Image 1 (cartoon, each protein chain N blue to C red):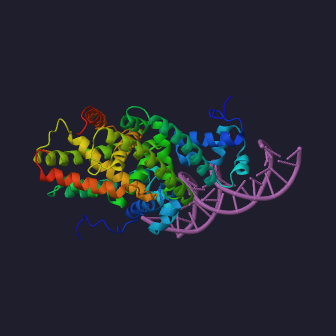
Image 2 (spheres, each protein chain N blue to C red; image 1 turned 90 degrees about the horizontal axis):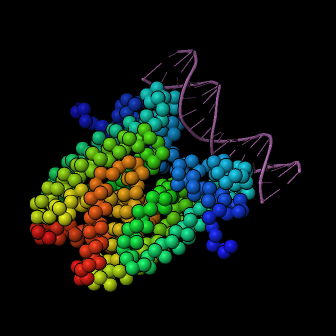
Length: 194
Length: 194
DNA sequence: GTCTATAACAAGATAGAC
DNA sequence: GTCTATCTTGTTATAGAC
């Protein structure tokens, strides 16, 4: 078995991290208490504090581990033949986007998480922007008029907005938006110079 | 004094609603406990339960009252000479956007808030879309190719994304995005038919 | 309508046995 | 490394005096 078989960690520490991510994704960060994540990982509550001095330390570790795996996933997806569409699809994944939203909310008032999330978010933006740069150049887009970082933010942030709204049952305009994005991506690919 | 003088409510109920909004805006919904908002409003904790059966009922009322006032603010702003820019500016206001983000987070796992937020969000989208429709038509934009609801979502959601990111210290690409939006809005206004 | 007091419970975190 | 047991604090919510 390779070292990258991360699905079900055998060690308690790994299971705690995985369990915390799951609870945050499914029930929000407020539900990720030491007792709740311990139960989810199949250990007792006090063990959480053996591995992590405080709950914030656990959250930061979830962000680090999950972030690293997300970056890997992203790097792989962005090297296929249609990076812009890949960027749209990756940011439309409800699981990842939901967890990210929870960390945004957490970061809003916890400085330890804020600094970690900022570092992560900027790495993500750099990777996405690099992929967009290649794609725009290949399609003959004027990079002064439409800076890659802007295009990458437009695609990623709109995709995430749709996910976030879906999560609370708001879907007004979503169909039209998806169709419009689809059209823009097709136009860009079909008409170099547009 | 007119009935619309909402700034500093004299009654305890009004002050509780106002205090809750303030705490949510400044410290997040998790900080908006019955004790905390009572202290902020200058009353005792038990009084919260005299006016609101549960904390969720208080949150819903904050959303109703704040939403109504926001809709009013929006309707006024969107009738000026540059509705698209007004839409951008209104969704760039950190205070309103931050409170909205807190309600999105709250709604994620509280169904009473979810149904109220959904109704509110769709009213907002309708009003924004109506204003965008007028603006696009005036500028000769093809409404089939660029549906007003899509343009309204693009403007509002990107503005909000910048606010949300600002709140956690992420600013990479923001300058470029603001400049780009500015250019697009100027182009649209200057070249009817573009 | 506003208060004091308290019940009932869950949170983060620690001590110490094994 | 994992457990049981417990301390302290803070939470929603209620009872009942004034």
